[in-house]
View 1 (cartoon, rainbow, N blue to C red):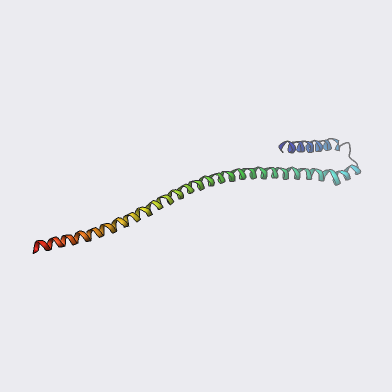
View 2 (cartoon, rainbow, N blue to C red):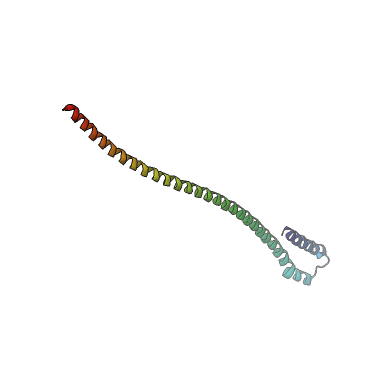
Length: 132
């Protein structure tokens, strides 16, 4: 792209230099009319074309940079997604274990309460025997 732009600028500049070099020789009414109708607009259009081409090139480079940045962000998002997925898997595992432990704890608490009632009943029976 840069080579094409350089070649176009070089050719256009060479054409304008040629016009200037022959302007003293080619200076009649027909030459002025051809220059006004065709050659001067060519110089203006050429400058506009070069400017627009440079703008397009800058926009293309900016777009490439933005695409590269976007791809970097996509990779980071994938990494974070994988990490979050691992955390969710771990959280699910620990939650399941916690539910199991809570179930066992309730079972043991219930069994212990039943045994305390039985023990209290035996203590009450023993106390009754001693008090008679």
